[in-house]
Image (cartoon, rainbow, N blue to C red; front, side, top):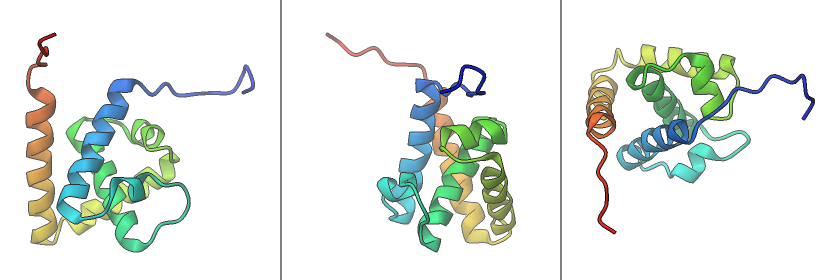
Length: 119
């Protein structure tokens, strides 16, 4: 890496939260997490599932699109397109209900106090 190259820091906490969004979408859509995180082109169903996870990270965690893009290993333009597609898809009641449920679950998990495990 060039010393002058710009690199956005992605924290372990960011990766955990993105992983949570990915796994929750996987549980509801049947698309495997590995498919959503694979490099290269994906089929339509996998792409849309990944877009749902990106949108959830953007909305639920209040992340700007640049942060979403970096955590998901994509560029900002791709994250923007994904979130725009999901916003439009929310006009359909089943999609809106799914996202509302997933947002509620994400908030309940992320906002709960951390639990120390016994040693």
